[in-house]
Amino acid sequence: MQKLLLIVLLAALLSGCGPAAAPACSVEEQAACPANALTYDTGIGTLLSERCSPCHAAGGVEAQRLLTDYAHVSGLRMSIASQLVTCSMPPAGAPQLSASERQQVLDWLTCGAKK
Ligand code: HEC
Image 1 (spheres, rainbow, N blue to C red):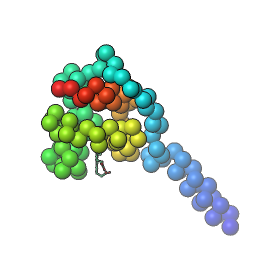
Image 2 (cartoon, rainbow, N blue to C red; image 1 turned 135 degrees about the horizontal axis):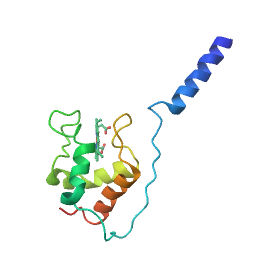
Image 3 (spheres, rainbow, N blue to C red; image 1 turned 45 degrees about the vertical axis):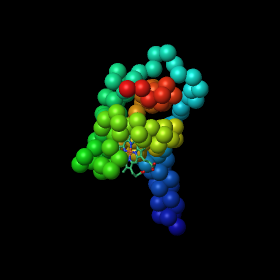
Image 4 (cartoon, rainbow, N blue to C red; image 1 turned 180 degrees about the vertical axis):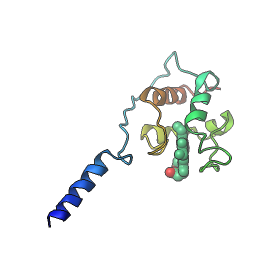
């Protein structure tokens, strides 16, 4: 009986702070386009290729959704927005966007996903 209790406690402990724990997802809703927003060419492209293209590129685990160039990224922008506001992408276990990086991408989307 004591052994069972120990296992339950251990499981609770591990699930609380293991890599499977959900990342803190704080996203500010932005109704208007901020004046200092980046464009794809001034930073968003680089950010997405660093954080997303290891998987979303030819040879990656999600090669059918390429995020390697402006045409692909802008075509998927609604879907990208919904992944980012829920902090679902990058998936748990992969290097995450910082809160400010996530905000930069969302601002870019709010501003019309400019090239
Ligand atoms: C570690 C690999 C990996 C990384 C890094 C990654 N993704 Fe994904 N992504 C996946 C996989 C696998 C799927 C398909 C399965 C799923 O939806 O979970 C997916 C699905 C998606 C989808 C479609 C979701 C849907 O169901 O509509 C979008 C949009 C997306 N990713 C955007 C991104 C963005 C943006 C980034 C970077 C900020 C990113 N992903 C980083 C592996 C990754």
